[in-house]
Amino acid sequence: MNGLFLLQPPPDTSAYMIAGYAIFFTVLVIYLLSLFLRWQNLRRDLSILEDLEDESKR
Amino acid sequence: MDDLPIEKSGPSPFARFLRAIAAVVWKDLAAEFRSRELLSAMLVFSLLVILIFNFALELNVKERRDVTSGVLWATFAFAGTLGLNRSMAVEKDRGCLDGLLLAPVDRAAIYFGKALSNLAFMLIVEAVVLPVYSVLYNVNLFRPGLLMVILLGSVGYIAVGTLLSTMSVQTRTREILLPILLFPVVIPILIAAVKASGGYLNNLGMEEILPWLNLLIAYDVIFTAIAFMVFDYVVEE
Amino acid sequence: MNAKPRALLILDVLSALLLAAATYLALIYAPLEAVMGAVQRVFYFHVASAWIGMLGFLAAGVAGIAYLRTQNLRWDIVEVAAVEISLVFFFIAIVLGSIWARPVWNTWWTWDPRLTTAAITELIYIAYLMLRQGIEDPNRRARFGAVYTLVGAVSVPITFMAIRLFRTIHPVVIGSQSAEAQGGFNMTADMKVAFFFALFAFTVIFADLLWNRIRLGHLAQEVEQRKLKVMQ
Image (cartoon, rainbow over all chains, first blue to last red; front, side, top):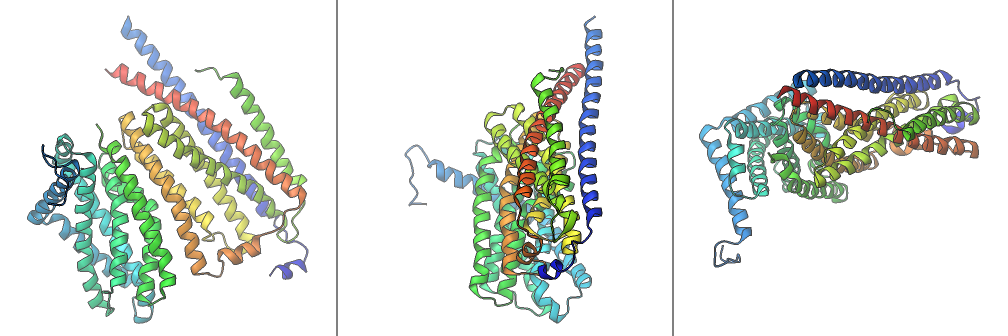
């Protein structure tokens, strides 16, 4: 099988390569975004909770 | 009982441990033989699974030989989750689990007791499925090797299943969760059991079956030990 | 706890730079592979992602045992963080593997032991997250999570061995041997540079992500505790 390939120039598989790297970076960005959004939401929850605690103290 | 070392103050810790296991097993079996809910559900379910496979796979004479072990293990795995779920859900709903935990017995004894009674239910179901399958498809499934594989596979399946079902009944999703938790971690059991059963059914040489038997035994030992060690964390309040 | 520590900021920047450099090495610096063509470049990030998945898997197992021994919720947070990162990167590794397999072996999926084990690990981790979701009490959630990670950590290597045994006894058209013979290649020195640099870069990225995710876990824990306090 290998010998058969060697007779020809390397097949053009760059579309697969681009797809692979595109998917890698997309998934990575989505994950980072999800980390960031969860962080933001938790910060907001925390500040609301802090306000509630302050009110109940007064 | 005579050969067990017995202290003057009472039975040795090991004898007490065994007695506690026997008590849990006896309680489950007695309750089951009164209601017969669990066994009948598991049995009917297994027969239905075989029926479905019959039409889904076109079990003709030629193909039957190759798929029999797969069909059997798929049936056992599905019926097994049904039984595990029910057996633990009953404990939880009737408050038996809390009662058991309050009892002054080693938690590990509760684990082994539950595992043994679950194993008994599974073996009973298998003992009914095997002759039915043999009659329906005209294959002799009663070969010592195959029976041993079924025992080894069931032990591993139940060892993990009892641990995981104790966890899953304490969650919000309960019944739905058990197969999702259990199947990915019992894959080695299913692979090894299917291959070993298939080996015995097709009269393959021992050198092809032995690796799978070793795998089954290793899995059984490892997971019984793990479940024994961590069961405390699963029932702790 | 809310202001990012300086060391973490430096690690963030360093990870980004290393990722950029690894991408450059993989896409431009490394020579074109003669047999497979450009798609072989996917290999660098495929293996490196799987490497992060493995690191996460190991970290989760260690954190699970540490939690069971100490009952300290800090380890639970580490465990969830490791599981989540492992889940993301095994997913990437599986998808990149498929993309590599398609032109080389003419199929999207091979039941190769490594690929299949990675997929089963994904299923275990999804089950893990579902288990945690169904439990309210943080301590019980942590205990059950740790027990399940431990069971998973032990079963995955056995699964890997079982699948490999499955393959060697019953070779198929695209078995491990023929597949390796066909998809395998000898790395030139330049390829090795790109390969090991990617592994190194991804190790740093793993540490960075893990740290960030652990901080998120601590914040989530604080919010949960305050919620309980307010409700009382």
